[in-house]
Image (tube, rainbow, N blue to C red):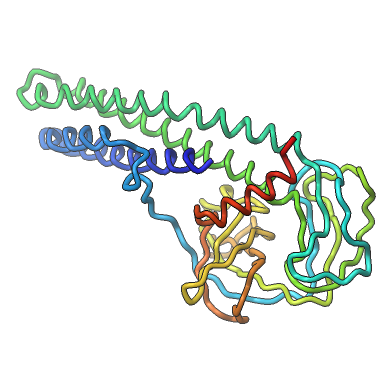
Length: 312
């Protein structure tokens, strides 16, 4: 999983270079020779190096708040595998509440992700072929041996292949997010100390995504609320992981609410629960971004959840 992430990140860098190349070629024509050669040289680099893995990640400013109750809504489809509490029980932060067996769903999503990743390499090769051809004909165009219309067609071909690659990478990112959601959200734990109520589930009972599982009351659960632009809203999913950073300390959480309607400025409110708030305080400003850091701790946490939900 870690290698796939790095490959996809590297491809985003290739994609950016292709976009710049095709745009400048299309706009400047005779001045494109150096751009095409430089881009081609950049393509030759190993996309799995650490340098290729460095990609800018969007962050958003949010405000910390507190909830005194919280409804657990299922983000997965499956059936009850483990019930660790009953209504009226007091729980401590991090204690298990419920385990949902969603192995079938998770395996299908894992397969979809693998298939999506498998489409990247052929699309990348087509984009590189288009870039190679543009590089080949650029000196000929500069000498007047290639017609402007033919040159323009090749630049448009590069744009087309770039757009196709962009869409395929985006689809693979979405497939990974959906798989991660199915893994992490199958194991329900207490986000804070509190009392469990309205838990009426039975062993082996079928669970559908969006269904009410139970509620925790008499609690203090930290969340962060932030806004995203309208074009982002359909790329965000309930249950998606987020990282919240305040005072150089990172905290983990996931998305629990998405405002699909937006306000007068076409901004959409997103709320994410925080599972390890530490010293975070109400009305404090913090940064939030989607996803977790790709470090050893994150890998261990994901592996633990994955063993509960999809192993065997």
